Structures are given as C-alpha cells and as structure tokens.
Length: 462
Image 1 (cartoon, helix red, strand yellow):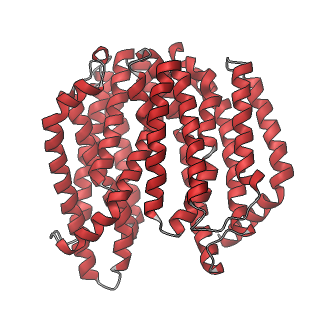
Image 2 (tube, one colour):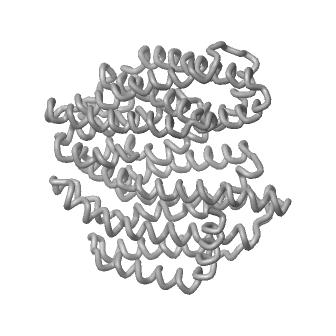
Image 3 (tube, rainbow, N blue to C red):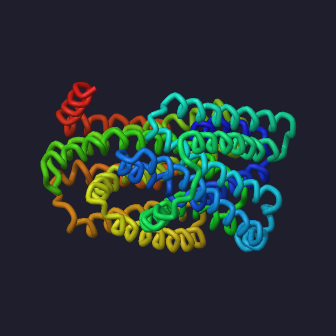
C-alpha cells in the first residue's frame, strides 16, 4: 500500500496518459489474480495451525501441504490464464486502450501468483513468532518494488517497462523468499487429510474477498466504455490516495476487534453493551475526522507532488468519494458480531447480494451519468449493504446502542457532503475547514466521555 502511494507521483509525472491507464488496469488484474491464487488460504492457516499446537510434526506437515497446494493452484491457474488470457482481454478491454495479454497481462497474472505465495508465507511467520524475519522480507519487497520501478522509469521513459518489471522482479524475489520460509519451517509433503476442511473453510471466504475486489474496482472496467482514459486516470489516482483512509480503518479494526471479543467472551452473552459500543463510538469519531483531513490534504499534496494539472480534475469529487468510506464504522460494528459468532455463510450472503447491487448500479449509473454515476452507485451500494447487514444479523446478536452515535453521525456526514457538492460543485478548501469545525464540535459534546474512557483503558492495558 505504501509503495503504491509513494510511486504514484513517479507514475503520474513520467508516464504518458495511455501508459498510465494501461498500468492501472494491469494492477487491477494483479489484485484479482492474487485473490484467486491465494484461495484465502492465508486466512485459514492461523486457525488450523493453532489447533495443531500440541502436534509439532503435524504442524510441519500442514505448512508443507499449504506450500504445495499453493504451487498446485498457481500452476493450474497460470496454465488456464495462458490459454484464455488473449480472449478475455479482447472481451473486457476497449481497443483504444491497447491492452494486451502477452506479455504484460501475463506478467500481471504472474505477479499476482508471486504475491499470493508471499502473502501466505508472511502470514505464517506471525504464527511462527518470527517478527524480525517478517519485517525483513517485507522490507526487501518494499525496497525492491520501489527501486526497480523507479530505475525502470528512468531507463525506459514513457513506457510501462519499469513499473511492470518492478512488480514482477520484486515478486520473483519474494517468491524465492517465501519458498525458503515454507521449506525451513515445514515438511514439504502433501497431506491429503488437511484438504477437505481447508476447501470447506476457504471457498466462501475467497468469494467474500472477490466481492471486496468488485466493490473497489468494477467501476474502472465499466468506465472505459463511457469516459476518456484521462478522466479515468484522474479518478483512479484520487482513489489510490484513499488507500491511506483504508490503512487507518484497518488499523483501528485490528486494535478494536480483539478487545470486543474479549469483552463479549467475558460477559458470556451475544449482545452489545455500553462498554463494547464505546469502542465504535470512538471509531466513528476518528473515521469522520480523518476523512475530513484527507479531503483537505489530498488536493494540497497533489499540487506539491504531481506536475500534470489533468490529474487535479477529480478534486471536486473528493467529498463525495469520502462518503463511501463513512459507513465503514457501521459495517465494522456488525462485522465484529458476525465474526465473533463465526457466521461465515451469513457474511457471504451479505457480500454477494451487495456485489450484485453494486454491479447493477455501477453499470446503469455510469451509462446514464458518467463518473458521478459511479460514485453515487458506490455510495448507494454501501447504504444497501448497511441495511442488509442490520436486517440479516438480528438473529445472531442482540443490539442495544445509541443510534445517533453509531448510525446517525455517518449519515449526517454523507448528507453534508452531498449538499456541499451540489451547492458548490468545485473544490473549496474553506468548506472542508468548516466541516472540520462542525464535526469537531459534534464529537466534543457527544463523545468526549467515551473518547476519554477508551483512551484511559487502552493506555492502562498497554
């Protein structure tokens, strides 16, 4: 994520418009390929590995089986993509973008395979309790990706050779490191007894992750038919800047979720409480404030790091784009209860239904309204996801909470940004500073006790 953000100014300043567009689509291919290659085995690994804590030999066999299974899946999918890639590219991409499967499309898929193998291997290191090795191999990946990509941009200007080989060659390096991790910590034998339970667990999870990819990327596939590639470039760039928002949201979740599980286990009831609700009240406050800060900071950073004014044209949409991230606090509130009750099938139903809504809304929204249509389609899909989640989780948990604090405030933020966009369509820093003051006052009067208590408890626990 960090390498993608750091490389963004180099891509925008050094690549021609068409090559920037091509690179963006090749990266999307790498992401979906990585999901398919990994088969969510990285998610399953920790659960099974900890179950085998009293059987060290079986743990080693499990590690080896995971490695071999990933290589088998990788080989099979690479052959499948090699056979069908050219046809798929002709069907998916418009001719004007000159997207070709050979060689760069295949490189994108191969990079996805390398990344999936590495992601699982580094996830294993967490359970092996080898933090230094975890940090070391990730730093090698980061430095190799940055170094080769920038070097390639300098040596081969106005082409995607540098970025594509930067990702591919760093991927090959981490693939070798991953094989070392598996071979040195496991016994490379294929144990069939692990496979059935793995497939039952991973099959729904990989569909959930595919839905995540749909939520974040399907719009770019539709947009190519209705707007220019320069408009797509500006839109794609501002979306990549929101990686920072996702980083903070994921970090908050990783801190909050374990604490919630501890509270609910201690209480022995599948129901929310004032103590557990307090954490999501804080999540709501932090999330809204960081979104406002991003709306202030991103256009300013654009002017500093990006030379081409063509990329500034998405500034006016930044508040609307932020609204699609405002509902994460609500969704995570319910996601925590779904994960606590281990209701994977329910999670899959919610995500599949939402994905279908988003595909439909995005297609017709873009067709009728262009870029603004895709933004509203994403927002409407998130709202439907919230409704589905609230309705479909009633039977698994008892929810008692302050509706304004958990649900009302994100929708107030959404309403403010929609009204602001339609009254003042162009980007205006003053109005975002006003938002910061408005929501700062709301949170001070509504949340000041919760924020103080949560901080005290967290610092005491540390």
